[in-house]
Length: 130
Image (cartoon, rainbow, N blue to C red; front, side, top):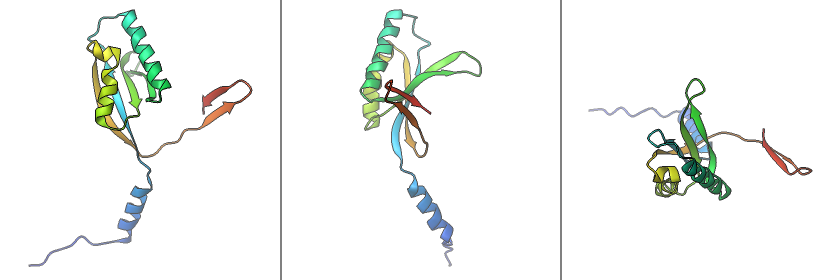
């Protein structure tokens, strides 16, 4: 009986080297469905305040509304910095919308590549993303 081993090639080394070259950063993507909630300006104010607090604390990398093919918002999406899935769950549970019954879905996201550039103007203390 002969066993056929997978042939080894230089491409295998190249692929492994390429895969290792990506510095993965784990983040958590949260989608938030608020369609079951009654419109409540006080709750919206609390949610927006919570978002600003999380952003100021370095927890939120990005947040905003997602839209369908037109101009109708379908849900909210937030990218969180958290040390674990459980920590992401604790953060999300503290959102006033979630506490009121909004449905949050959390996915771990291993970011492999991307780039951002910033512009800083010292004269007027402005910062922009390019």
